[in-house]
Each structure stands twice: as structure tokens, then as C-alpha cells.
Image (tube, rainbow, N blue to C red; front, side, top):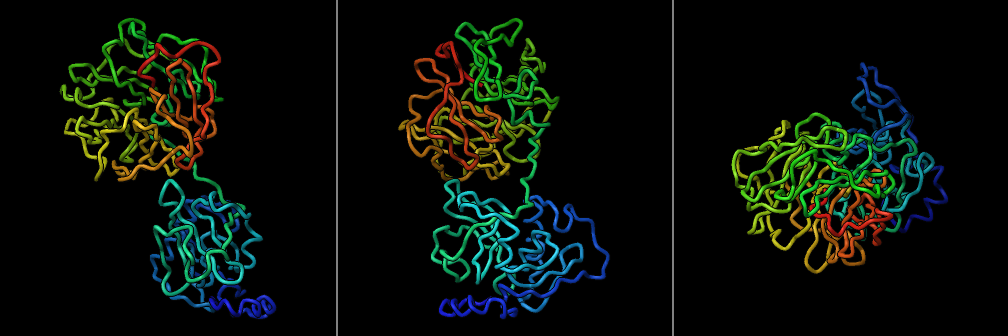
Length: 456
């Protein structure tokens, strides 16, 4: 894999002749005689991003020796050339070891901002690296795999603006996406109910809230970023007036969206969803005690990745705590687990949870008193990043209250909605990368949400 910049013009003129070059070698690919194992993808077939990364990791774990004239098998026994472009060819499960000059023919050029797991940064005459993931919501740092020397390497927290990647000039690299790569299907826990507040079972995200007289009402989502003009009663009898910090998810694992909230005496109760836009008339205790009185800003999501919906919230001293869900409508009876290694959530209000950056892990978002909208990326183990990242490039969320989150417009990305003091219900469309659109769009064609509180 040549790295001399001064010889670049010579390489351009002699590209077809220098088959020994690690970046453009054309060594024939052979199939090992060992029995091949079943692979999720077929050779030269459609492949998911997670499989590309898994295949890349396979060679990384082997600690292979860089050799432009050598080869090594993938996990199913097919041999690939042991250099940078052979490594990418193996990760993509191609039928032959391509080169840095021929890889673009199997892919589509994209902007760097659109890079996703399994895409590549390719320097046409020099080198290619395999993109793994963004390491921050702002897309300024990333992780990648590379076979530019011995052994295969994995790098993290590399600035996208670094002068070089693997000793080759940043400006020489272009971003490409394999034409047959597909996004992984993300199956939220409990059949999707934990990630989708769908009270009436029509597959669209709804919004609910309570009035000052204790009515619990639901506005059915239309799937296009708007909701029905009229709210429908979710409770046949009783009053939600004494219930605060409402959250919704499938807490008991029956595939229907439930409602939870706390009473002034600190009880945490759950009203089971009936799947038709109503909930049970009686609330059931989710936690054996009355200690939730000091917890505010309740959140519901699978923060620890076990497929069960957890409850989180903050305490008056600024701690962000999580109570793991048991999957049966209750949460762990022990004290809440700390979600934030350092920092203080005291100044954060109107918190919401969803997968805002598209990595399959539940994140936490909230606003500060100065109107900033920040996101703390979830780590998938019940903790979040120590620092909050701005979700809004411009504008101010200070006048927005009762924040809620969900995929309201049906594009597969988590949006944020909230109300203004004049009663407007607005939605900021999520971009899928930890940011939201700078302008809010009206979700309600008529009516007024001013008297509605504790939106869910």
C-alpha cells in the first residue's frame, strides 16, 4: 500500500501495470477447500451493516499479517487478499478482492455526513478504511477499521477533520456506500410497544395528556406528523388529577401501551392499556414503596438493553437514576441506578427518551433554562454519555413545554413535540443523527392544547 505523495503522478500513469501495489493489486481470489459455514448473506448479495462490521471484526480478532500477495479466509472459508481493499472486499462479502480503484464501481459516493456502519472512506490510489460508527452526536469523531499495516487495526474517536487517516491525506478520501448494503431492521423491545406510544393499536404514534379536571385524553396520531382534532377519553371512570409525570410504554409485556405515573405520596402506579385507546380504571403499584415522590421528569425506555422497559428520572440533587423494568409491570425494588457518571441533571427540564441518533440505544434529551435542547447519548447499559450535545442548530426551546418524543411522521426517526403557551402543539422532525429540524410544525389543525398537561 504505497504512501509516497510525490510518486502519485507516476502511479496514475502506470496504474494498470503496478499490480503489486497493495491498494490496486488484482490477485485472483480462491475458495478454501475447508467446509464453509452458513453465512447470513450470499457472496455478492445483499448484506446488512451489522454483518459487515461483524466480518470486519473477524479479521481484527485474528491479528493477521499484512501481505499484498497473500490471502486469508473469512469465517466461511472464502479467501481474500490480505491488504486494505481485500479487507473491505471480505467485509462486504464480495466475490473477488477488489482494489481501491474498482471499489467505487460497486458503490455510490455519499457525503461524509451520511456515513453509516459498513461504508468506506476510499483514497483512489492509496488506501481504504471501513467506517464503523460516529462517536458523537455532532459527527465530528468516528471509529473505523483498517488493514494498512500489521495487524488489522481498529481506531476510535478520530476527528473527521484530522490531517491524515492512516498517514494518507484527509482530502484524498471520498465516502462511498456499497450498493447492496442495507440497514438493519431494528426491533424495539416488547414487539415495538416500548418505542411506540400507540394506544389504539393502529400502528401510528398517538399523544395523550390530562386536563385540570382529571380527564385523561388521547389524540390519535395520523402517521404524518399530525394528530386528530379531538381528544378521546382514555379512562372510563376515575380521575388522573392527582397523577403527575406521566409516561407510556408496554410495561407488562402484553403488546399494548400502558400509562404510568406517580402520586403525591410517592407511589408509582401503572394503568394497563387495553389496546383500543383506553386504559384500566385502576392503577397498579409498579414499585413497593412511596419513594418516587422525590423523583421528577419520569422517562420510559429500555435503557439497559435487556428488552424490558425501564423507568428513569432525576432527583432534587441532580442525579439521573434508572429503575430496571421486570417486564411484568413492575420495576426493580432496589434504589435507582445512576445513569450519569459525572455532571448534574438539576438544570435539565422536560426530559424525554428515544433513540434520537439511530444507534439502537435509548438516549435522553432535555432542555436547559436558556432554551438549549441537549441530548445525552445512551450507552445501552443503563448509562448515558457524560456530556449533552446540542440537538438544535438554531432557535430556542425555552417557550416549549411538556416535551414528548416519538416517530410522529412515520419516517423511522424519533421526533420531538411540545406545546407553546398559546396552545399550539408543534413537532420538530428528527434527522436520525441526534439533531432535530430547526422549525416546529403544527400537529393540530384546530383546537388548543393550553389546558393539556403531562403530555405522553
